[in-house]
Image (tube, rainbow, N blue to C red; front, top):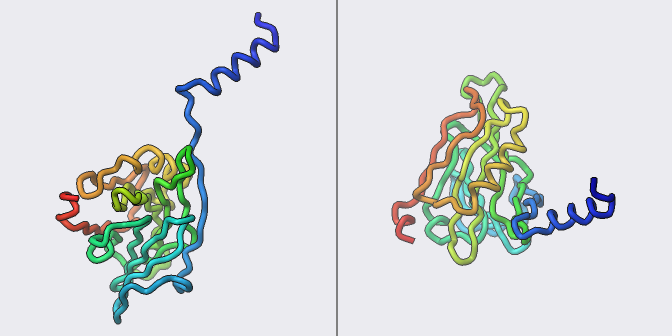
Length: 203
């Protein structure tokens, strides 16, 4: 058996070996439902587009239309500001807290936001879905939904959403890859609705 000091030294070597990666981490910012402090880009009787303070120098863009919300993260292309919209078929609204997933250098690569989905029958048992999105970077401008987790049907919904964010977001090809559901999906989760401009594929 190796001496205690040798075991400790071996453990330290493994911990700092080249193949050992630091785990991703989370940072949290608020999403004010009144959009206080956000810059109004466009606004009309049924909705609008607002640019809001996000994590450090990464903003988020809140878009609303016909009582449905869509949120993009990071320095996105003007094309997405003008035309992109990813939401749910039923009326919905986002939660008040954004979870940003940071890589081992502290750069945000994904954002997780809870959506509250209305119940069309009015029973009060609407859905809750964690929406995982890619965070746009300055050199690509691309943000889009990466995946969905039904928060009511999965006890480990937050952990599952973080796993999807860490594994899929950074390399997700907006406009090419399809955002998928992960874990169990209940009837209250609602149908998704996504529009990304066709010309995005040429970017």
